[in-house]
Image 1 (cartoon, one colour):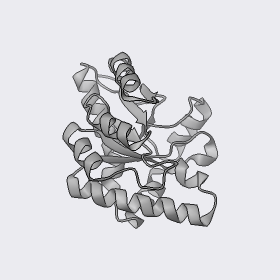
Image 2 (cartoon, one colour):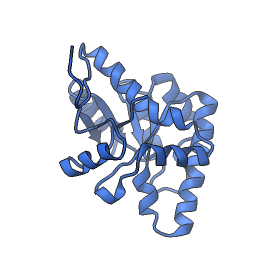
Image 3 (cartoon, one colour):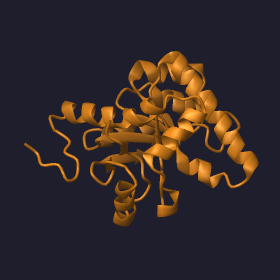
Image 4 (tube, helix red, strand yellow):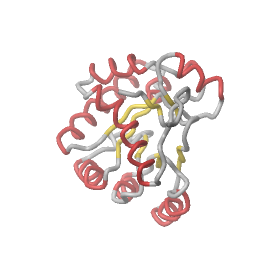
Length: 203
C-alpha cells in the first residue's frame, strides 16, 4: 500500500517534506488537489465544470445538507470533505451515503477537525460522529478516506497513527488509507497520465 495524503491544507514545502519523513509516500504537493467551496448548487456545479479537467483530485469542502446531497450526486467530484463540520449532526445520512456510493464520491475526514476540538467534550463528539460515519459508509459500501488536513507541522500525524485512530472507531483502517491512492491512480489513468511518486524514476 502507498500512503497518500490528498488534502493537506497548505502548500508549505516544509510541511509536505515533514509529512514524507513520518511515512506519507506522497502528498498534494506532488499532484493537483483542487478544493472547492460554494454557497449553492449552481455555484458548485459551475466550479466543478471549471476545475475538473485540471484537478487530479477534486474536493468539495462540505456545506449544508442539501448542498452536500447535490455534491455527492455528481460523479465528477472525488471527495466530500468534513461533512457535518459546524453542525449538530454527522453530515452523512442514508441518502448521502447511498448517493456517494453510486457516484464514486469518497467521504473525507480531516484529523485537523479532531485537533481543533480543543475541549474533551468536543473531541468525544467528533469521535462519535466518525464512528457513525464509518458504520453507515460500510453499510452502503461508500468510499471514505482520512487525511491529516494539516495547516501546520503540528497538525501532521503518521499513517500508522491515523490507522490506529480509525481502527479504534471501528472503521476499516486499510480502506481509509488506501482510498486516496486508488482514486489518484484511477484519475491519472482517465487523463492518460501515470503518477510517479517522488524519488521514483519513470520508465
